[in-house]
Length: 254
Figure 1 (tube, one colour):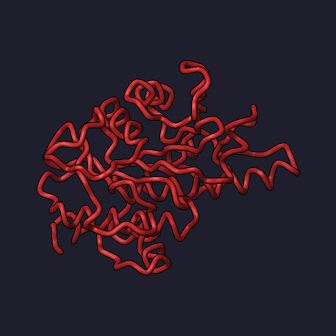
Figure 2 (spheres, one colour):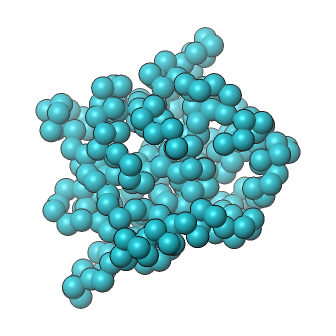
Figure 3 (cartoon, one colour):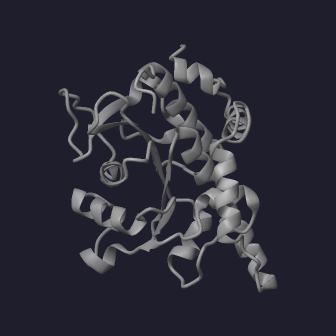
């Protein structure tokens, strides 16, 4: 990430991300999206504990990887902020994280059926989507990742993958940008719905590992206004938020 990125530009994209995820029904009253802080190496930016559709620029706060809120900010932070800190700590390549409870994913988190990419636009969800079960390490709980220990255990399950499910809970996806993380979160839900429909006509032909790699690389290396940018512009219009080009965000234009 360009260290000169203007914080206000990043926050504008985070507001858009929250609104987009809400209008696309990936999040509801619950769920959150964050971005690695461009200036402080052990912090990330995330909204205070508020429903995503209600987020405004004034709602964002800095949170340290260990879950502490520096600078005397006394606003309530998300309980599951430890998901974000533990992943940023373990994965230097990750720039943005989305956690949600998409309904279409839950059946794949509680059965032996593996969620795998079924259509080209869903390739970024990854070839392998592990399932984290809180009960394995922590016994009976409310299934929420409410401690750094739980967050780190989940991060180990996620490993180097792009997505991971949480048994009876939801999922978390990563991105090398906010736009990539939002794209993957949306298409993870899309893939779950399509795979459920296709399962009536098995066997299913899933994307090969090579196809997943080629498609993902094409999206990651797309020119401005292609790939993630094109999807982002479309979703911004849907969500009623201002579309900002990638160049304007990178230059810090307000």
